[in-house]
Image (cartoon, rainbow, N blue to C red):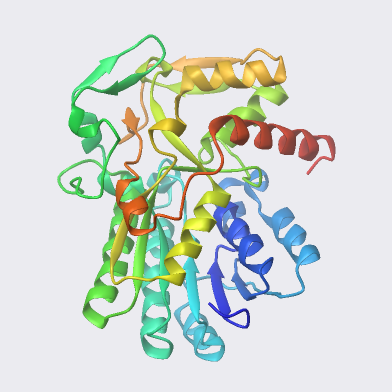
Length: 356
């Protein structure tokens, strides 16, 4: 990668997009960001990423922002034709699996059709440019719930030694309940793979677990740890949906996501798929997360419990990182759960105190 390379980043004001902008702009690359703050229309004022755009604009002169909707095929084709980026990092999405059921057309048009618009533009104007797609572990639907689980004091966990390190990329994506969000992301995931295989474009799908970090605009329907920590600081009531609050997720800091993307762009492959998460070591249950933030903030976690679980939700999910580490042995997790909680806590304290 040359420092004069042009990198196109969609969803550039969001959690991962913003982190990726920060990461590569700091290295001197020319960044072209695409973001129309669609999150605000999805989640309301609290979901707005405008504050993050302003932060990035004030920090980097080598960021050119485009307020473009990825659903607008003509604008996307024209923009990529004009820029001809050397690398594309696609993080834009409707990210909530709960919200999708109430906005099915917007969800599919953003996640699936928007991705198709980008892929076809790349095929036409810069097919040699590596394309990284932020997919999701929701492409596996609720199939992980069919695995035998054991209940412990504070969490559920897998019984079989086959899953001792988590879910790998060979896990089935078929014949399960995905949520409409999961279905739209399956479509985009397969499209990215197909454009790789069919047109020989270097692509990869990153099937993310809980991607998190201090710059997350955490809202109830999206942003597990960020919203949990914000609720604790604000003394708001947090709702737990089912599974005795023992459901488990692995969490990966947005910086570690950006560093893996860097590894892939430097040594791209055709139509690859990776389960991107914090792995077993960075996994945590709801109950464990409550205890951890209470210890940091010295505030009791106020929560209410609903017996009804979220549709298609995982009881236990953490990513098996073996494939990622075998393909890119220099990459590693640098932020553990303690780091993640501390950073999010400090950032929310600052943002709430300044009314951001």
